[in-house]
Image (cartoon, rainbow, N blue to C red; front, side, top):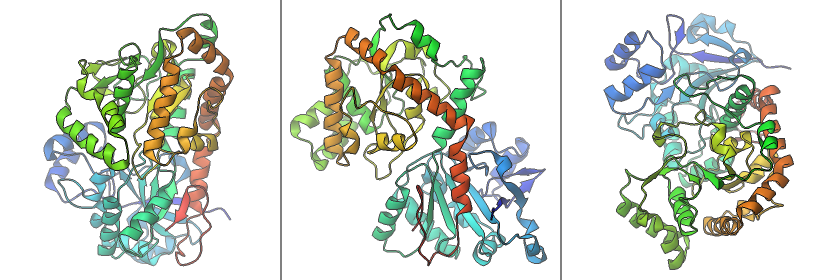
Length: 487
């Protein structure tokens, strides 16, 4: 039997729903809502940051798929004598949309309060007393959470007396179930939270790049001033006999640990300043970074020689290098690329968001080379390539060693990645060119597969299926599907 999915909101003003979890009684927030005509978007987000000194903890309630698939309601349709409006076989969610870092929603910020603590009493009553009502924390645009975050959820849920198993945490972390189990065990709690996997980046990137391929002038973000373009078959076919300038292309925005180590690798190979590699370390305290990273590298098992090798970024004379945007920090997610950058290089060295973390995650960075007809080597979470293959994409083990992807030990993974990059670095530009042309069937297949996620929307269908399969009986054994488990 088909279960209709309903989204229920606590606050609707002037026919506009407001995010669940905002401090509606805060006069500063009230003034901001009036100023921005009750639109919790764009300018209000910036004003909030300016007035309060930190980002909003929550964003819009919408789930990251076609909203026509849901029925939307105000909570007052279901309280008191109106509970007869509840359809027994359907499923109802109070959605909390996390904005950016999960820390903000969990109270690990100057605000100091988990948004769950702001849920109203009617909301709690419906979640606890109606078997088909749940709290859905939507964090599908990111894939990282910490033990502190989980502890905050558990503490706040207990504080609000929310029953076990009635909170759903949706995330782009593809090992979320295992990580939650680990953290809950370390926290010595028997509280139960269900997890749901959904890769928003794949959904968003497929829509974005498919639309660019079909509609000249399409903009994912309205404030982008340049025309976005994408590399298509005709572009690579017409340039098969023309050597490109660069072997490698790599975008590096926020300078995470693994990206600093990547800069060291590329600099010592003599490739950093002779390829399209962006980075900006002008605002880093390099002395502190080096001291911190030396300790970490030694602690996880690198040799003294390796520690020195991977921290050579401390000696970089060029503190900033751009590829397309002068202000690298302006780039957020996808939506900033132009095909000329990709057509001037062969291999994408993708430095992902996560590398050393408990969570494993594929972000929009992974789908940029796929969209723009480039092969990729990934400095990211373990099993990234395996996860891509599950999604139907192909990788490049016929051309270089991809065994790094199977190494949960980050020391071995980093060593193997260094060896792969070093080997390609020794190749001539003609050899790389010939290898690229030989790869084209795989590269074109991957772009077509990405577009299929927008055309046929299998990602959305799976998410809806998994939402529909949520059940309240947390004490019984629940069959775990891909990405959907109970803890």
